[in-house]
Amino acid sequence: MNVQVAVNGYGTIGKRVADAVTLQPDMELVGVAKTRPNHEAELAESKGYPLYAAIEDRIDLFEEAGIELAGTVDELVAAADVVVDACPSGIGAENKSLYEDHDTPALYQGGEDADLVDTSFNARGNFADAVGADHVRVVSCNTTGLSRLLAPLEAEYGVEKARVTLIRRGGDPAQSGRGPINDILPNPVHLPSHHGPDVNTIFPDLDIDTLGLKVPATLMHTHSVNVTLESTPDADAVAELLEGESRIFLIPEGSDIDGAGALKEFAMDRGRPRGDIWENCIWRESVSMEGSDLYLFQAIHQESDVVPENVDAIRAVTGAADAEESIARTNETVGVGF
Ligand SMILES: NC(=O)C1=CN([C@@H]2O[C@H](COP(=O)(O)OP(=O)(O)OC[C@H]3O[C@@H](n4cnc5c(N)ncnc54)[C@H](O)[C@@H]3O)[C@@H](O)[C@H]2O)C=CC1
Ligand SMILES: O=C(OP(=O)(O)O)[C@H](O)COP(=O)(O)O
Image (tube, rainbow, N blue to C red; front, side, top):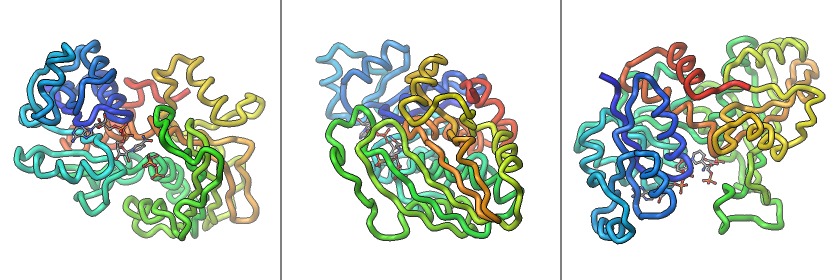
C-alpha cells in the first residue's frame, strides 16, 4: 500500500509539499490541516485535498465559511503513516506529543530546534541517518542549499574550511509585515549565524563559518561562498562536478540571468508551479579557483528548495527507498532539473 501522508500546516511550505506528495506513485495525501478558513483552505478544497481542523474550537469558522471539513487534526494523524509538520517555527515542537500519542513518525521543518528530533535531514547529505527514525527535521532552505553544495565538494576534493555570507530575503512575497524595507541588516549580528551549526547537524565534522544579513528583498536568498578545498582542481572541473548534481542548476554564461528576478522569470516561463525553483542556482561565471580557494555565488529559492527534501525524508523514515532511488523518483515526478 502507498505511504499515507498527512500535512499539518498548509502554508508556504505545507501547500507545496502536499502538491509534491500527490505526484508520487508510492504516496497518498490523506489530507491537510489548517487553523482557519482562508484562501489556502479554499485552495485545498478546490484541489480535492481532505481538509482537517488543526484547532477543534475553530470548526465552526469553517462551517460558517462553507468549507467542508473531513475531521480534526487528531483524526488526520491517526489515519497517516507519516506526518509532515509545516507549521510556523516553534509550533512543530508543540505538536510533537500529538504525533507521539499516535506513534506516527513526523517530519519537522528548519524553524524547529535540531534537538527536537532524532536527526536533521538533507537527502544529498545524510539520507541514511533518517532511515527508520521517528522524528526528523528537514533543515532550512539555506542549510539545504549549503548541504547540497558542500556534499559533492567534500566527497570529491575534501573541504578544509567553508566560509559563507548569507544575504537573506527579509520575508516571503506574501509576508507584507516583514522587513527590513530600507536597510541592510547584519542578522544575526553575532558570529556564527545559525546556518553553520545547522550545516553541522548534517556534516558534523565540516569546518564552516557563516555570517548572515537580511535585505529588502522577497524573491530568493543569495550566498557568497568561499570554500578552501583540500586539493586544487581548476574552476572548469568544479563546475563540471556541480553540473552533475541533480539539484544544482548552473546558470549558463550569456543567459542574461543576473539575479533573483530573472531567475523567477526563467522559472515561470518554463511553467514551474508558483514559479518555484527547487534547485540551488549557481552562476557559472562566478565559479572561480584561487589556489585551493573556491569562490561562487548561489541563489536559493526559500519557498521551494526544501520541498523535494521533504518527499525524500518521507521515504527515509518509512524505509521505502534508498537515497539514490528516492532522489531520482522525486526529481522525475516533481520535475526537478531545468
Ligand atoms: N517560508 C520559507 O522560506 C521557509 C520556511 N521554512 C520553515 O518551514 C516552517 C513553516 O514555514 P512557512 O511555511 O513559511 O510558514 P507559513 O506561515 O507560510 O505556514 C504555516 C501554516 O501553518 C498554519 N498553522 C499555524 N499554527 C498551526 C497549528 N497549530 N496547526 C496547524 N497549522 C498551523 C498557519 O496558519 C500557516 O498556514 C517553519 O519551520 C519555517 O522556518 C523552511 C524553509 C523555508
Ligand atoms: O529558514 C529560513 O531561513 P534561515 O535558514 O535563514 O533561518 C527560511 O528562509 C525561513 O526563514 P524565516 O524564519 O526568516 O522566515
